[in-house]
Image (tube, rainbow, N blue to C red):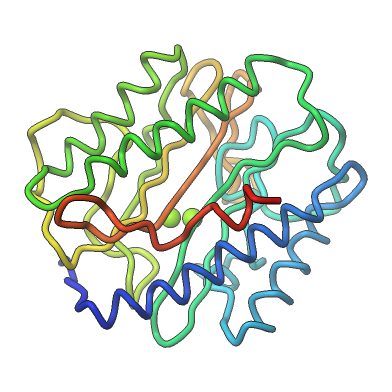
Length: 255
Ligand code: MG
Ligand code: MG
C-alpha cells in the first residue's frame, strides 16, 4: 500500500532527511586512512541523537548499528567493525534517521584519500549520475519504470552493471514502504507517479559483474568477482515539474 504524504508531512520529512544529509557530511569529514568503520558509526549515532533524532537502522530487523558501511566490493548493508579504512578504499555510508514520526534515508559513496584506479572514480560518477537521471523522472504523470529505466540506461552507457537484488522504496512513517523502486526496468511501464509520493531512489552499480552474495553475517552483500560497487541514494518527493530532493548532498559536497 502506498501512503501519500501531505505537504505538511513532506515538510517533516525534510527535517529527518536534512539530519541524515548532515550526518553523512559529518561522517565524510571524518573519513581518512586509519579510521575504523565502527568509529564512523559512533560519530553518526552521536550526531543523529544530538539533533534530537533516532538512528532508523539501529535494531531494524536486528541490524546492530546506526549506519551501514560497505567497503570496496561490499555493495550494501555492510556492518561497521574494526576495519581501518586505507588510502584508495571506497566506502558507501548509508544512513537513516527518525524524527517527528518520519524517516529519512540517504547514501553516499566516499573515497578514502585519493583513488588510484581511474575506473573507480568513473564508477562513482556514473552511479551518482544515475541517481540524478532517476530523480529527473520522478515527476507527476511519469511511470515508475521511467525512473528505473533512466538508471539502467546510465549504467549501460558507462559500462557498469546494475545490482538487481536490492531496490529503492517508498518511505515515510516506515523506512520501507511501497512501491519498490527498481534500478532496471522499462520506460512507460509501472505505477503512475503522483504528488504526495515520497520515494528513496538508490542505484547500486558494480564495476564488473552484478553477481553478488550475502555474507555469513546475514547482512553484507558482496560482489562475487570482488570488484568494487558504489551506492548513492536520495529521498525525493514527486513534484509537478521537478522532484524535490529532501536529503541534499550539498552538505557533503561543499566541504
Ligand atoms: Mg539507505
Ligand atoms: Mg533506502
